[in-house]
Length: 143
Image 1 (cartoon, rainbow, N blue to C red):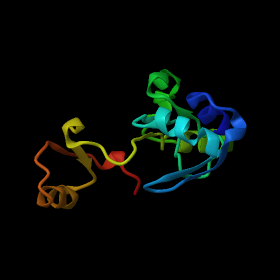
Image 2: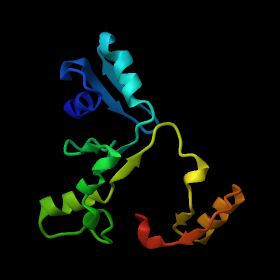
Image 3: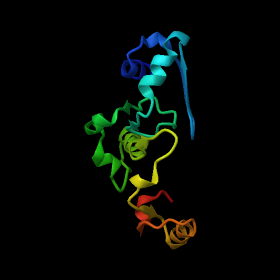
Image 4: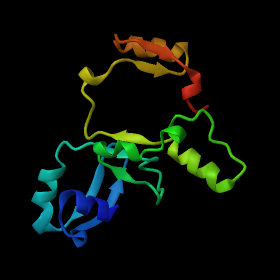
């Protein structure tokens, strides 16, 4: 990941230190002389992760949105990740958790609706004032 980040902002790999991905923030150690360059170039960029970004998976790839063709959509949208081959099982399961990483928040104007697991979840969402279409589809959720 260090090499990908360094390449994305065009600074030497040695300028990127520890990277800690957390639930709502990501901390990246950057050499002081390259900090302004990195901040300027990453401002507003959204990343794609081809599997769970915070899961400690050493195989995760962070992609620029223009690289969406590198995502394994067959596995991402698969309804079942089970497999008799242990490696395939874990690969499918991890790719099912691919995500879009958006810094800070997603503006409401980009939302077109929501999927929820059941009627109570739909009611809770409506209680929050959500006025867009809500689809109930338990198959989309882990339970």
